[in-house]
Image (cartoon, rainbow, N blue to C red):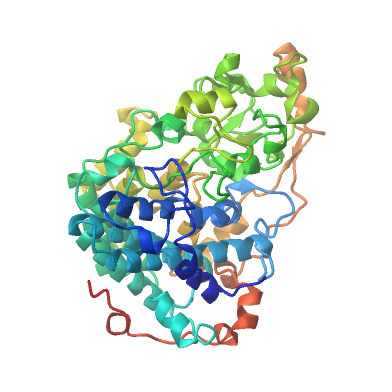
Length: 582
């Protein structure tokens, strides 16, 4: 059965009483959770919002990487519409991500309605839970407007359902959608506590404020030039988070992405997954999509080895797949190894029951340890494989969470907004409309991120700090976390020609015959590259990047159900038309 985006948005009206998940902060069981017998006390109120931290987002997982990382040139994925920027409205993953984002909005709206109508919970807990749901609602619209551009605003599911007008709505302008996101986050901040909630991995006031800072930074160029007031607001909100939230950077970069640190002082908004699959959608399904064949205990669980961090991303990290692996042993930037595995890399936090994970040994060793990849052939087309979003073997999962993983299901949290991002948002916002700053607080912010990456104090950024320096630091810090494409989108609002040129000039293609260098090196530890055989693909042309490339089409089936979605967006007075009157 097909559903248009409005019906997907309305699904929460019917489904919020049936969807539940286990493990994250205790959840109601499927056979007992319904509106009539739930929300009777504080604990049930909190449990009733828990599933917004994972289940409705599950069908967005592929889109999260395909849009955020493949389209941006951070991740290579073969002959993909996302790699060559030719995605059309019938693409299955496009349809799934759209449905998922509208589902988040629908479920959030319904949770808010149910909690408002409940009488048992305390007002403080009701406020907290409504604030969390509002923040997730805002985040879903933040993805929608950056992916699809103009989209409808579905403020009240039940009202539209009762009116019968769900196939007769129009898109709102980008400016209207951003205003709606801002209004939603402002209301969330009114309701959320300022401390305590995030200690449990929950959204609190400062998490919503951090997202608001990012929204203002993104919106700042929407008119075609940077808006000074938006930049000032982004800086002010980010600075409040920096100064007052109690958040800080994790000392070790790679620890951010380990199971035992699913909840930590750096991560402000995260999807919190369970390793179970009952119901399906509560689990993290990233590992199968990006891990090497054989990386997990579940043989059928990994098919992503042929996808790899791009050559262009490696260029920004200052590494190359034809470098002698020995030259990377003393590299400065610890983020590279925590982001992508390359020849010579070993990891003590993967395969802990086998003494750690050795990348080349896994592929070429003749014993029980190796012959992965599959079957002793180097699989990556770029000379690297993804590290972030991986958990490893069963023993690693048990050591990290105390429970086993399942096939295509891990409990690793996905961090959507980190304190490091807030520091970089602040630094960039402080460059204002001129694109540079000598403000010491902006330099301090970016240098906190830079030093945690392994750089000594003498390598600190110096005044004047430029926007271009910050953009590169953002790429390295947040690589493969689903974010980079959206930096291009926000820049396209006011730097369209520059971002088109940048994407066209990326090294987005694959290498040929890297295994001809790596297998002999593994066997002899002598590095040699036959450049007549081991070469980068310069034959495939750059994608046809145009201004239209930075907005994906709405699913074709949605337009069939509601032809109004093909019409121009209608201007809406957001503050007058939509109210959070609670």
